[in-house]
Length: 346
Image (cartoon, rainbow, N blue to C red; front, side, top):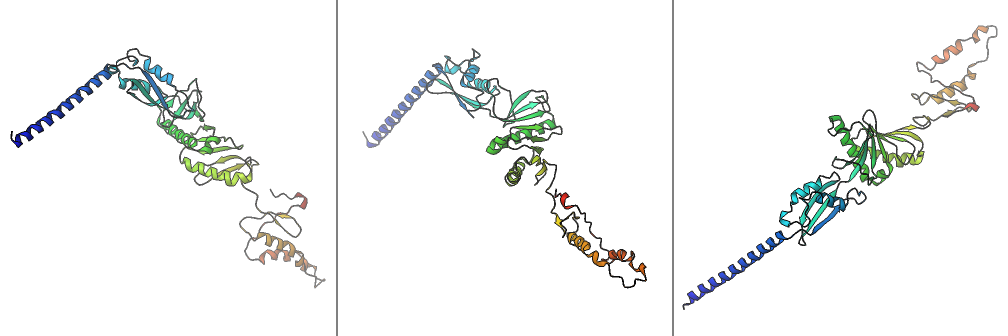
């Protein structure tokens, strides 16, 4: 046999060998798949993902959803007959479940991975009904099993599922405020209940301090809470947490406080003359106290000794009338005197 013929025969043998291997592998794979499809589902294993503190759904609830319909119950059913897509829709239909993924593992177990919804706030309407609000803006019904410790909003104007434009805006603002409070450790502990006012604005009574915070609308949330925190640190820490009855952060770059004693600002500085009497001075003339004191001290010196006793008319009122004219057209400041024992700087 010629060398070329031997080489060709070896190549053919090699190809046939590898072809047989691949064919055998395909047969085994088909048999394995066929065997798996003919195998029955041995059970259901549920994995819950999300905040463990909000136990509104447990594994038993999910299994009950999957086994409620005997025609769809995957347990002891051939794997080829298990409709995973339909079972996912059934699980996700639960209002407390955000998403679900189902698959069958190598042990013929139906694996169910469930992501729970996490409530941000509890909302009470005018009629007294309530529901939870999550980060996606979805309504979640209240559970008899568990109550989430979240911020409470009261006086929401409607129970309707289909919201009007103005209600939708208010709804979105509630979600933004609740999300910021939930993400911040300090405000999560400080803000417990937020009241919706008649003009669709927000105000709340913090846990620390005896005052009401008027928040305004639900826009610029981070900036408003930031200004309020600065005021807490630099203002209330010095003036006292019970100094103000109301704080207003609705205006940009401002925190307006209403004092408990009714004063909107500290009293102005008071000045004293040589007799220790208090003087209230107009704010438009800072030199007024000195001028007023000078006027009072120079008044006795204006009485000159009589040079001509034979003419008493020379001592009459003209001297006092010409004293204002000596200062030109400038208007003299007004000074108000009080008795020393009646001094009141407030």
